[in-house]
Length: 107
Image 1 (cartoon, rainbow, N blue to C red):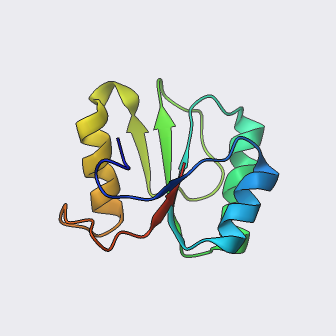
Image 2 (cartoon, rainbow, N blue to C red):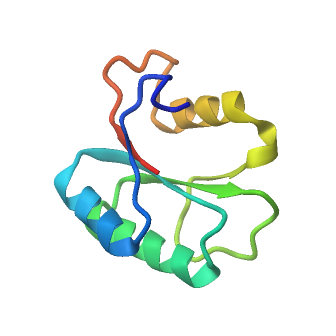
């Protein structure tokens, strides 16, 4: 859905792969899945802040999170639906919905 909205999406299933993407691609937003354990979330946020300190971070949530280490700009509740997710990404990326020059997104 983010690709359909004009964003380039790179997917990582492991922290090492996410780090490789963060080092080799222009990534403006990191989106972390709600299926990550609290420890995995904390490690992913720490690595993102180490490699790209000014990159925005969005956490997906199917339910409420316990306190999160790091500084995510937003926690998005998946029940809001795909349109709301695209709107949240546009807002975080500073976009007005025109994504023709969109920065890469890591998911």
